[in-house]
Image 1 (cartoon, protein in one colour):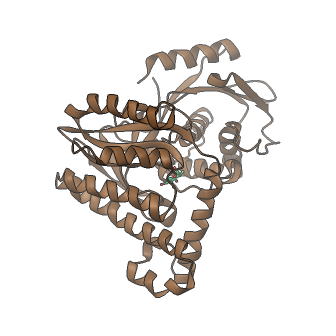
Image 2 (tube, protein in one colour):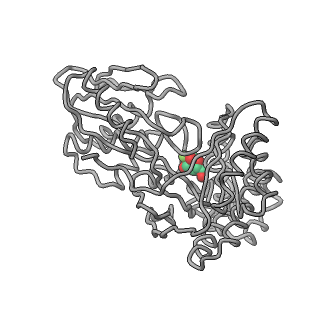
Length: 382
Ligand code: GAF
């Protein structure tokens, strides 16, 4: 864990609030495969990583609560019985939304202070937002002995995202961040909200992330639009969610939907199958197949689901030209953020140099490259 970051957050909290806080680590996540399947009740294959949010939290005796975003040097003070969403796009909604959703469940909290910082870049597609939400709900659960289970906590985080942030997200990010297991990825069934852990050791290969460092606007509304398109097609099919449909079912209603929405639903059905096939490939130790599924996932996200962008497509095209990279795809909601790459370890150093230069030449800006370790979920730092 990032001990320098823990020290920084603790010191900032003590300086600002003059009390000893509880310290929480809440990780970001990667996702091996299964993108935009979670809100279709499907399968996803994420893992918590060793980067995330560090939060310091403690009760106070004041009549208000304060949240301090250390990196932005911004704080907000609010009254617990007068909560409302802040402006769109603001970090404040991740905190306020969680507090409001806890109270909506008739759980009683008193005033508190929280300070936080993180080491995942916002917009990288590694879900700093779910990490922050989980750190708040986890911290408040500890402070006020709310007796919430981890599953209740992630449902609160998700509702905060829906009602305060305005993104109708699925449950993948909050689940992976809360329930992560060191060295494991989690094959999560988003209908039952239960996961099977898979120990990940790719031997001569590893996963690396390449961040485009772009986040195109409209991504939140495009996300919500896609979710409603999927739900509309599911109701046309008379099923609860697209997870229950086969390609043959979809074909029967082809004439009743636009070609664009047909492709989107087809993508979801295919991606859901790919997530299950990927878990089998990992069990079989067949990284060639896993890699091919990952490339196919990107193709679908880009051409059928249309949530990629030039920068992500470029990174994946370049990866495809390199035989030592078995698979690459965009990760997360899309329109920017990272690609995830399954690469031979001996190739990583030279590919980093190559792709950094190629990306700079093409877009005039830098990409960033990260290695990540698969980590445990949200927990107290002792
Ligand atoms: C975002 C959402 F928050 C997730 O729920 C998921 O839908 C993902 O995009 C796409 O797979 O991270």
